[in-house]
Image 1 (tube, helix red, strand yellow):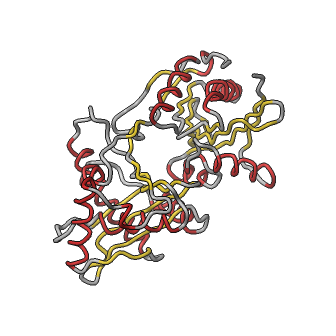
Image 2: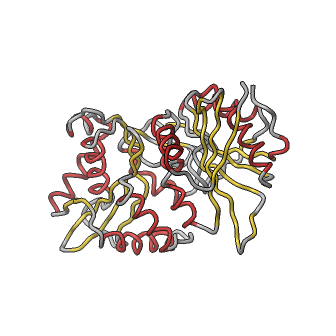
Image 3: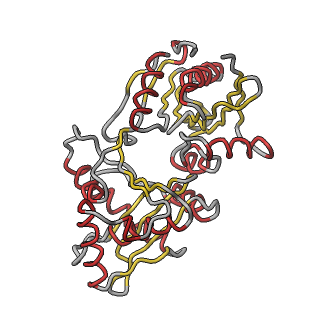
Length: 336
């Protein structure tokens, strides 16, 4: 398959619409590859973003939002494509990724990290294609998650979504919260500042670095102004005690970030905003809700597993995703 690659620092007009539609409609599309995510990526760290469009006989077959670190005018010789490249057909992944790697090399990028967004058996096939063109597994337990949990929500009532013995604990915890007087609601503009504070405390408690205010402002714009998700809050005893952000991409909604006050309360603080987010996703037409990732079964880190434990009450079936893969661009083999 003969491919042509074009790249742009920014997309406008018809190209922007074409890119956005391709990522939205692709089975491997993800919010991190959406047009508007470039602003969030640049706010997270000193970096440049670039959009790649790959065509075959004029037809768009692949896209990528690439992030390249840069500082004080110096562009570093490595880059990443988080949850991408995006392709419409899984069989095109190897060829599209190889073409992008060659185009990246021409722009001075020597090492490229990719993490296409496929699940289950398709994730295994995607990884086979990446290995075939010269990429190797670079998964790190404290990096982007390679396993998640999902529930089907399309056209279902609350009773159907939370039915069964598997989710009995969720129903119990939700009733406990309601009985205690906790109430979930859509987040307000002022709740974003509360989320920043709570999340910063959570990260510090885990010995991790907190996100910058600039990054949180970019996320807020992505969710509110771009309409790519929603914020939910839980009120208890006349104050906000927990918050959660749900991102929406196509027919999938994903629980992205959550945080709560540190003290113990007579109910599970994470449950009300998350349940509200699931109901919202169903009501706006999503058919699948992703719990936002969990550690691999082989990961024994107590902090990561403690945070993910409550998610397993929603659905115990672990869904494997594509792991992060890296390669030296000059060694990437041409895809068939």
